[in-house]
Image 1 (tube, rainbow, N blue to C red):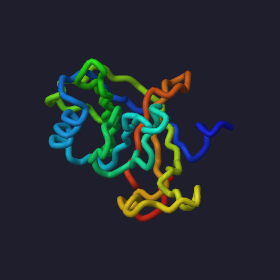
Image 2 (cartoon, rainbow, N blue to C red):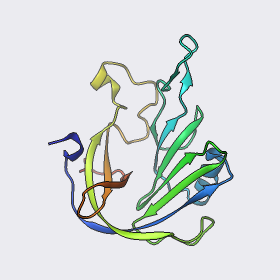
Image 3 (cartoon, rainbow, N blue to C red):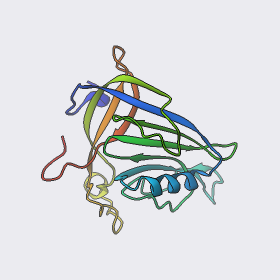
Length: 186
């Protein structure tokens, strides 16, 4: 069994409402405006722009970056970000030509708002997986957590929902599910 298929998962089928587009706003501007309109985001995942190592002059992944967090407060330029909500997610990519590209999907119909109407909808199979994050570095790597690194209540385990194409099982997209209170996430 591959790591991809391990863990608890259900196999319900949902309609996923989708829309996408481009914006002239920078990624940071777009995300901040979106969060002002939709403050109920409970988690984000961010991929920072690689930094240049001053010794080797090679581009390297940013060390100790808070890739997973409960608020958008980038400490380094971000290339890509996903915002997670109770039934939807927003994925935003920095566009090399300027501005950004975005994709939003939801298990509920999308409101006709500043992003426009939905572009598409389709049926997908859902697979929920309990996953461990790298935030619990002391347990997995013997490296202490930086102060406040795990202070948002998410700890070291989250539930990922994959949306897969029916029949093929290939992943279309994914999102982090809300934290279950009063017990472990499944």
